[in-house]
Length: 231
Image: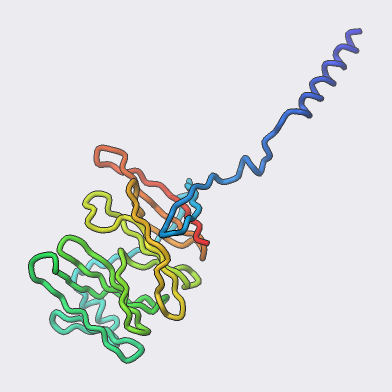
């Protein structure tokens, strides 16, 4: 009788185990996605624990632009307060500094030629802010952006990201652009309030990796990593 009871209990346990609901492994490892609106489009995002990313560095230690012009002297030159940039269509773009007092102050500093999108990259200082001007070398068109362009591997898109969580003199957020037929087409802008993109890179043609910062009190900031899926 004892052996029969043991067999009965074992069979009952196995039956209950077969009937219980288990979470599929695929659902356990499924990434938790969020969304982020950039312009009128919604993109999926994912918080990352991986921090092993190499971001492009934009280090221009010389506040003047003479050294950078010298590297591109066949297409760029400066005469006094005016910067001249030669374009492929025969035009020459002239950017003249305005160093008068007030909000009209503008100082143009040539930085480099971005060969991926064939654009002159010019840093512009205003009275209390800044911007990056992209001069299309193909057709001389001018695009004013919030920071340096970071180009996708296929060279069909680029992103500009800027962090300004304290002074708020510049846009804290991101701009997306497409490149079609040598033309830069705006593809969305997003101003952020609770965090800012400190560094940004393309993991591939459809994925952005952002090293962001957010306030955590007492003037300190927490660093985090996020993927944004651009499709």
